[in-house]
Image (cartoon, rainbow, N blue to C red):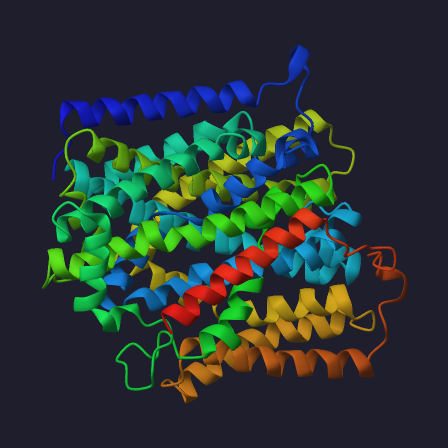
Length: 519
């Protein structure tokens, strides 16, 4: 697969246009210097469409597009549960979590932990998130993204990796979150349009020019790949253990990712008020329903169009080879958009946590200008570390997605326990929170070694329950938080607007129809 001159022109126009747009939309009026709130929270003025689009742009990257398409090839539509259950999770975050965060003017997740529990848990979790974002998220996106670019263009992979990192860095270095969020509507639009083109063309190939006929044929010839709930005799049951995707550990992973993950929730924290944030959340939920159509379906179609691939992750790049000149350039630009948007989001969140949770705490007299400068230096440092460590950390892994899951899965249950109790149980204290954090890692490690055949999702669910019990017991037998708990919840309103309620019911109805149809 090689890009034609037309394809290259389309990609270059996209790269130039999105870079210029990011600088223009993030300029301060009248030459005013950016404050920390401008840089890290877009002046708390993001509109709903920017919030929703940015949530998805931060989430979808090379590992999702290529990895989930590969899973569609190997497993089938069941992998879509990661996306469709996330839509339901977003509604929960919007209705019950965001009102608490916005009422208390939370800027970072470590800040919430300090105001609810104390300084020790804030420091521990801030260090964890910095390590996660730099050594897991940044490196995995850089590595997988560079593989995709090298496959399409023939470029040396390390050169592709460096260019990706440099572009994502400079794209958001001046404007911060505003540069990322206000351009993500373009990134997501390109992602959806490009992804739909791949789906339409692949199904048309199967259906002799008809998308509907192609889908009908695919459904008739590969019925096993359209089962959402896998049975125990399915070879991929360990990856998606039946009903556990609906009532088990996937909930814990989703709540941690969408509710308490800085580079995700930061967009909603930048809303002017709760209703605006909730509208953005609903928009993101509807986009989540669409993602499997543009990512998973091409992978399933590849079963018929390219049977016998050596690796499932080759499915999406193989389907891209079917695209005509011009369309290939647009789809490739969409893939780059997904990679760049996610990279920029993570770079900005690393800068936010380090600057506000470490530097500003130790230099309270620092000016706004200095805080912004520290954020930019941190962003540069993070991407340099990511570029230098991507190959050593991920070069030996067959699947980058596996690398992410193995690292984060040890901590996810404890994170959910800490935040859930912190928001909804006043008796929870720092001793209980620290116990949950430690227990989550230790129990996950013990169960992985002692019960290696237990599905990953079930292990997360079990560790969550055990960590929850331990946190409650320790909190009850130790001193209450007292004055250290500065989080106000008594006057928080969980009332949602009629439009949010109607949209939420629509999401639930669509999800119900999908699972009933493809049970």
